[in-house]
Image 1 (cartoon, rainbow, N blue to C red):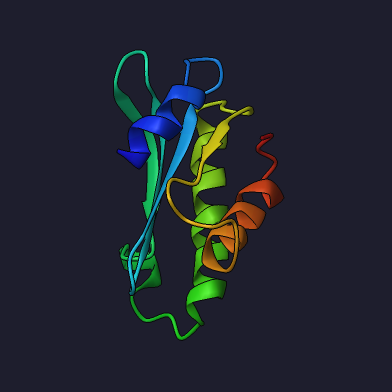
Image 2: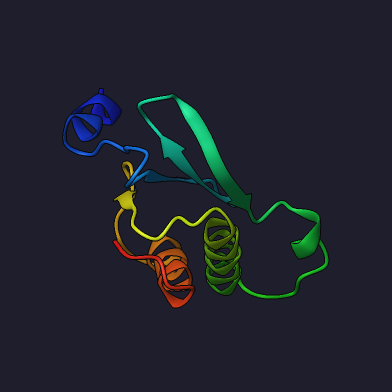
Length: 108
């Protein structure tokens, strides 16, 4: 129900795709989606092999995931995006993720 209410306002296009976040107790997942074609363009998560033996806190790891997503988005020439935080507050791990994405030059 809440997801539908958010998606009424936030919609990704090919020129400005949507960044969607899912946060579990142990991991964080983020993807860039083009809603018109229904495709995931780029994705990243803290469960990838790169972060397997990482000893950072969850908040620091979220920042690294954001930087990785930003790098992958740059390879596809994605520069402007719309942010969909879902039902999560803009605080803690979600905020750290966004800061990592912004460090890589994506514009919200």
